[in-house]
Amino acid sequence: MIAAGGRLCQLLGLPRSTGQIYGLLYLSTRPLSLDDLVEQLGISKASASTGTRLLCAWGAIQQVWLAGERRPHFEVVAEVGRLVRGCYTEFIKPRLTSSQRRLESMTSSLDEELAHGLLTPEEHRLCANRLTNLARLQKKLLRIAPVAEKFI
Image 1 (tube, rainbow, N blue to C red):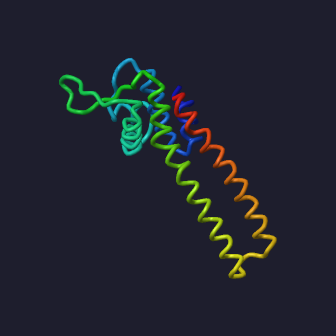
Image 2: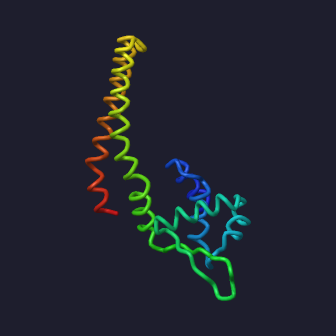
Image 3: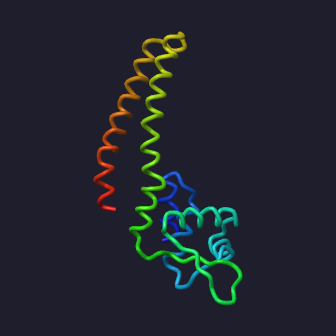
């Protein structure tokens, strides 16, 4: 579970340690402190802190206080759907939205580079075709996003 969580986060462009933290907490029978996470996963305290803040923001884990302990501990929120919704809302959806602006900016820059002689017409055509393909994919993703939101 720890390795799978780490790989999934890497695929999404997130720190591997974030997925490892979730995997460890998901199977843990007790809340764990940052020090516990550092020791059991072999990660830095900074990585543990960053990962727990991100997972808390997504609603995937929660901070808990144990009697007689000064340090906060963390436990998983058992509903995996909260992780999926949080990841979508906080990570994927904003990137989908900003990708449209970036593609438009890239297309505009491409035209300017052609006008200034920085690209040959063939280079411009190749790049423009590739950007058009990316824009099509991005539009499809934006069309299915509202449907995906209903399922998560």
